[in-house]
Structures are given as structure tokens and as C-alpha cells.
Image 1 (tube, rainbow, N blue to C red):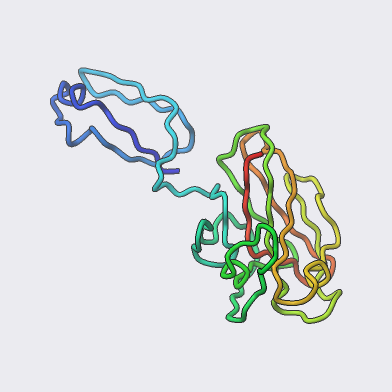
Image 2: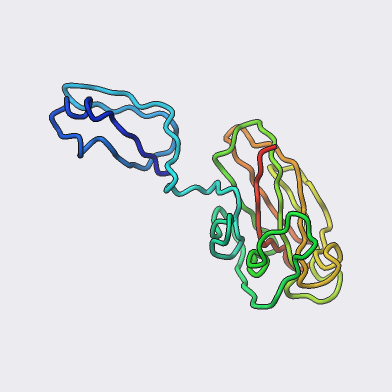
Length: 206
């Protein structure tokens, strides 16, 4: 992640380097506690958080296979899979917690693939909200898959066409999962018939 820190202007001036040079800095690192020294003075920076401009694989909402739309970030954090986008309309009316239609017009798919969401609070519970739409098959039984989060099987035998009541209709599934010791949620899909498919992800604190 990208981190940024600031030094109070009066302290920056004491170094003789010039406040403009060190009052604001940005660097890339893994972790949350850093130290630096500026001779003849020293300072310690602790508990730095990623800046808003940082690259965060832990985006709480992800448009799988697509670009940023609304609160959903462009596709990130994935492992494996191919991407397909569609131009046709996907029905979202009356669907509780439906994402913007554009989220359902792109997808990541494969027999097996996954996403990792990071930067969460270790041991805390989250709602993992997954968004689907069957944009290819027009009959039941053509796509069946399972959902696993952090190694726990949360649902088996999902058939989007059946669960949504047809093709090109939004389907929303909510699961509860606990972030691991590293503050990660690993979301994995594996198919028993054809390929698993995912259109969007939301990770919401409970």
C-alpha cells in the first residue's frame, strides 16, 4: 500500500533540509509502523494508515471484470479467471441490495478462481455480499458452482439461472465470514458444471 506522513512545519524547519522537502512524503511499504531519522534530529512515525490514493486490494466493493462504477472499484484482487462484458440489459428492479446494473454487465469466470480482500480487522465478522447474473446460458443446470470463504464452504450448487428466476436477472447472496489473522478474506468459487461466475463483491462490517 502507499502510505503518507507529515512532519509539523516547525520540526521540519529545524532539520535545515527545508520544510517543503520533508513536511509531506509518500512511500510504499508493507506494514503499519515505520521509523526514520533526519540528522541531527530524529522522529518516529507510528501506526500509519494507507492514504486515500493508495492501491488497496481491499476495496470493499469490486466490479468483477469491469471498471469503476458508483461505489464499486475497478476489478482488483483476483486470482485466475477470464473476463467477459455484455451490452444487454440486466433486470435489477425489486432486487434487495442490488448493485448498479453496470456491475452485472461484466463478470469474471473460470472453473476455479478467487478474490482476496485485505486490510480488514482480524477476527471481525463481515457480510460478504456477492452479485451474479446469468448472462450466457438460457436454461437451468448449465452453470453450477460452490462458494468458499477462508476455507469454509458457504454455499453449494448455485445455479444463477434457477436462483434468479431466469437469465439476465440480478442475484444477490449474503454470507457471514470472519477475517483471518492477517485481516484477509479469501473468496473462492469452484464449478461442478461448466464455469463459476461472479459479477461483483461487497465486504461490509457487521
